[in-house]
Image (cartoon, rainbow, N blue to C red):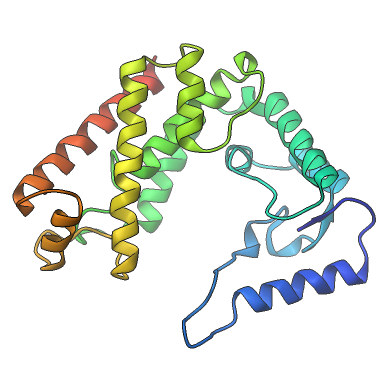
Length: 244
């Protein structure tokens, strides 16, 4: 949480109340799970900070993974002046610190996430597996930081960023289109899985029949074959972008 001016007891109480409301159990479940440990300085840091405090943290103390994550940061609710102030600081930090983040940092972070979050033997994880959603997001973020000086503004949203990166020649138009199409395709699968309260595609699950039909296929074999092919191609493109 950030405030435009001075931090007050009211702003802290408001933030705490907001968290309680968003994470309260209801008959329909929880609205949102919010991990406040990801804020500057983690669980030891203040729950509410001002723009100056955020700038100081990200310029002097934030790790490379936090700078990478800042690419996806955006204000949820604020005054117009507050939004502009936050986005201005965000862009300044990214442009100044982008050169510190290497290809190895991206590869290491991706491997770490796979190791810590991916459960082996649980089917196809459309988000975490090689060639999945996160593969595309990481490759796009890598290109955003690599070509940041060629960008008049830092785009938000993976598909939008791909279009901008394609325009400046950061990747071939064919690869840009394939990654963009695949990202939308994966998100459709992910949306279906969420409705089924699942997060992986299990090849032996009867639910795969309905998912295949939802994605426009007459058979599960055809759907799975195409999905494996797509994920393989996405992984190839991502690897090529890291090496280029």
